[in-house]
Image (cartoon, rainbow over all chains, first blue to last red; front, side, top):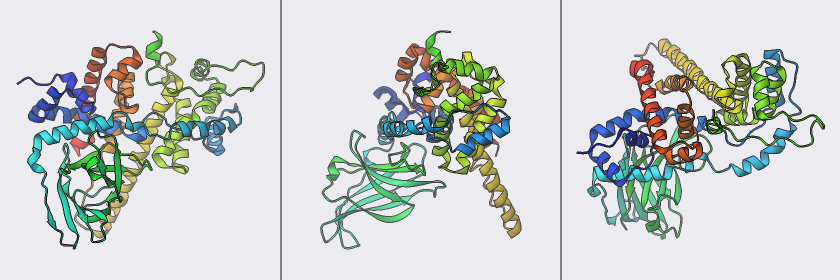
Length: 245
Length: 211
């Protein structure tokens, strides 16, 4: 068995997409996966949005400079802070999109491929029958843990008597501090994402948008989202399943 | 040193404001860095004028607007000024260095809050004389982050610039190679060695393994 090269394992730790060959090997080789996990600790500690390269500038209030001048004893002073304020609208307009969209969609594909290869297609169950809440269960999907997470669960699409649809989510996962779980429907290219809302460990029901073509967004994904006000997917997926219809 | 390594970890320049100080040439970023490193007060004032917005933007992103973010921004400039001997103009642009100082201050603030939280919890636990439900280890990440930022400071170029582009600008190794002009193989082997080095630092000094 040909192991991945050390360089490829480092790229895997950075969650860069690997070749099909490396991906398949990684799925099958515990030693290579352990190496990736050990290299990934540093990545996970430092590659966080709060430490990322600066985004939109925010002019500090004037008393910040006053405190700096007092602490350093310097008498020179910056020109009126007005220019910084002036530059804000343009900069923030240009940088509303978060930095984290570039590589992460691909990484999630890679993670999904690995998880699929490890768990096998049999992990996804499809049911049809009457739901105990009176609606009709259209489809149920097992949510399997991704990578080293212990999160798992089940998502069930239920059509209520009035024709509206909901997703019943039963999530088994650890409680979080300073972050939360969010559930998404994602397309096969992992580009289009429909956020369905905040979920917590346990059972809950979220509405499905009327007329949403669920078949176009078959991946049910649970992510961990930081409390950063950023509405996009964090890139940290902990459990996932795929609808078959 | 050629121009390309100087671009590593660089921060977008802020366009200079037109129409100020007519007649006097506007010092360029390099000149501001030189003044700063030389301990000329104007260097600090100019650095603040140009880059406080970026630094404060990071602080606000981490802590939200308010006193915590303002404290971080203040600490960044005070600490950068008093520690200016640690800034080497030949190692990179001043704004990138300030951003690095800001990362330290953010991580330090997390660590301080975590320590305070645990002290409070410990006091509560003691008061209740309940079995110690210790949370040690849960927040080892906070301490380990401080450790790894320190390890990044010890990296030379181009290793440091490469890993910063990967970590903080979310670039792939191909994008890093394109940005820096370094060969793909060089970028990959630097990434590998740097990740190994961070792993070693965690193994030797990391809080998670010693909690």
